[in-house]
Length: 204
Image: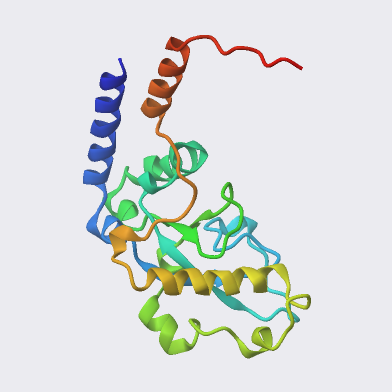
């Protein structure tokens, strides 16, 4: 049964990846930047939920890594959020070419909340970001002490450090987030556990 589940998983994965335009899957492993704001979800592709930047907020740009949907845990990111976007977009070749990028947000410290979606029009290439100075920590953040920095400033510092580590790697080797099991792998683990001897209760 586990072999059948694995085969089904691989067939579904390969079929979906084959259907993706080169404009999308050719970007997997690509480093770039997107607009970020302290009080908002980073690079949220849903314009309806986006807030207008406050006048007293200094805009910044967050480093991100475009990832394959099979580089992220199946639930909820791939099976729910990404698959929903893909299902809607595949009705039209034009829409599929404009599919939002799934990204790992460099600097994230929550393994359950480190992925997001970026519109292709909001994605800034590493080359353009370097020209605009986004790859360098802003002076006003650098001059602050650790206790003075806000949460987003600390995240940006971590993000630039992670980005610099990845910049020396090949795109295929740029991986972040915690290890995870696919559904068929969980089935094998559960099966092997149930086949083993019963666990003895520890004496209190």
